[in-house]
Image (cartoon, rainbow, N blue to C red; front, side):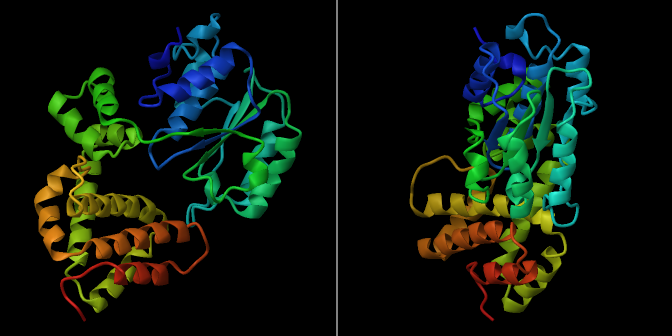
Length: 335
């Protein structure tokens, strides 16, 4: 039996099973592409796989053990044979120089592990030239190298990359799975775990951070208060907000994903779907808005938010793109 819980990856049992079987049967690919939403568990899975590949436990079915020296070093991020790419701190773009640096290092023989593993974060934000720089390594991979690419979506990744990678799609985890993980592995109280699991939208990483750091829930409250406040602002107020938000481009992605889930909840109420709301604690306000705005307006706002999320992956003017989105949001005050 495959020890799924042993990997400490919650809500993605099928992915763990797939990777564990490849390990047992020695069918390791040279490249993997793990796709999924922000904080859904992509890097956690990638790190656990890197540990399983290099774990010192004698029994392959028991890897990763989380106890041997190599497992502990990889878990802490301090093993020389597990490399992580670094994106530009201002733009979030993965540049060609960084890809060349990592691929150059992964070509070297492992220091003291079986494999050198390179984990490329946010690979969907890699420039086309940067993706091209990875192709040579994918076409002629060193025998000891495993590349793991993490991406929010597959759309911006070159077909020549995806065709050479085993693709693992991580979907949002079930609320009950996250709740059980918080209770069983992080000693959360039942009511607290239920609330955080529901608010997480299937993002295991966000749920764990929110349990360990109360400020995550506070930031969510502030972000949703801001969205509800926008709906009462005239044009000039929205332009001022766009100017303010555009100063921190990287912070916009989690903010917009949260707003996107809010518009989804509002749409569920308007259409009378009966589906459980992600933001159930906001239901009174959502019910009020459902009377004031139309289904078409909500769909327009949802589409505008999705469009901006895609636009942020380009070099477009962030402030202008924000202004366009905010003008597409419904409002109670015109002007």
